[in-house]
Image (spheres, rainbow, N blue to C red):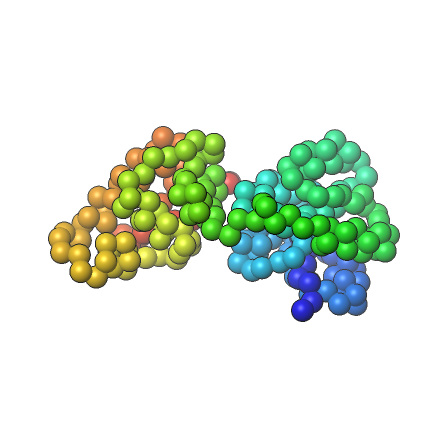
Length: 229
Ligand code: CA
């Protein structure tokens, strides 16, 4: 199996050059020219390594790195411009494995990629973690956090949040939520869903001035990453 590389770089010519070189070396390469699109791509698909530019439209490299590290130990190599020395430190602080200063020799990038790909960090691999912006649900530890605060949830609130997070960005009808969280045999008011969404909002949205859970009037609910704009 070819190793899958996600390249997030807004300099189109450089990105194209690196993409072609990596493909020639036998890597599968996906290129994104925008930080937000790149982060979404990371969340949607499995990758073996990320090449991450620092200054990006949408979301910058530091922020992307920070977010990725909340859920994955995938190797990340930062690509920085020559005059971004201070940011380089911030890059490593945010969890990058290595960095390359542009312009770089492709052979050096390839060599560093091989090293990064070999590094095994099994202890840090967390598969059962769901995130939405600053909201994290660790299903192994049964732990919910917003920023660094641990959130106390009842069993049903937790199940509801887990279901919403597993279906992130997908609108769920009240019936779907009811069937999934309360079970097909549930007998009672369907507005129990609205009631529990309200409970959840009072614990994760309102105290943090955020809006994780969205309502589609007449349809249902969904959870999505907070807009950064
Ligand atoms: Ca850039």
